[in-house]
Image (cartoon, rainbow, N blue to C red; front, top):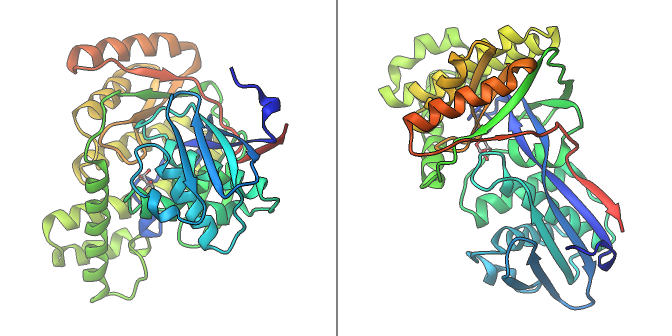
Length: 374
Ligand code: GLA
């Protein structure tokens, strides 16, 4: 049991789900994520030393970080994300003070729902708060992204950390990853619900495959730039790409085609969401999944099976993988009155066709960072 009164602040940051716009954030594209009530919570109090004492509600391990030598804590089994986050905050010129931190993560690990971003963002917000500093959530998200890149070795885009820090209850974010301009769009699904399903396949090698995809898109851009003046792949139109794809090696062309078409789907999804047209939105989800499967090759048997089972269900208008892929979750838009039948249908099919059983999450669309004085 946590005795909240033992701590001075309770700081949370959200996991996220991405409705559409997958693997486009690091190509300057627009994404459409929302923050979830599944979050990481940090209970924190100053301790008057130069140490950060970390503990977790779910682990017996305890880890101490020295705030003057955080580099030494690189590659810790537990505490690596926190060490990276503290170092980035400090290197950006902010005050770091010794403190005791108790962490509790209810974002399932390896689910593609950004548990790592929730940990990084909440840790930075907690360190700022306990040092008496005001923080800017956008800066926090940028520093958290750097921690992920530098300490976890994933050359990620900004989507996860931005959503975790800047999410807003009941709203999705149309985030332009080139400019960080963000429009909050109310999520009104009418008679439908958004169902998150975990394929529960432990993902392996995700970091290296993710970094490989990112490098492939960079290769595509640099070839295209020798023919066309563009600053990012997301700025290449579908029409222009038709004339340019012949200059790219076949696989690289497939990767670029996914990015360019996915950006167009985000534009259509924005319209569908604003019109409340769930059937159109669902169709875009299906197309997105297919592109991630065929052109981008980040789905795998389990996610395909899960999405295809959902798509075959009568009351489901669309389903796709969400997040980085290679395991993790799908999202499905399902008639609210058919949700129980949907779960049963997908569960049975998925279990029959794979070695895993799925889990379903009930999560609300929530705020990004919250800070409570205890
Ligand atoms: C991971 C990364 C994000 C984004 C998604 C794919 O979640 O952290 O930056 O690239 O994959 O859309």
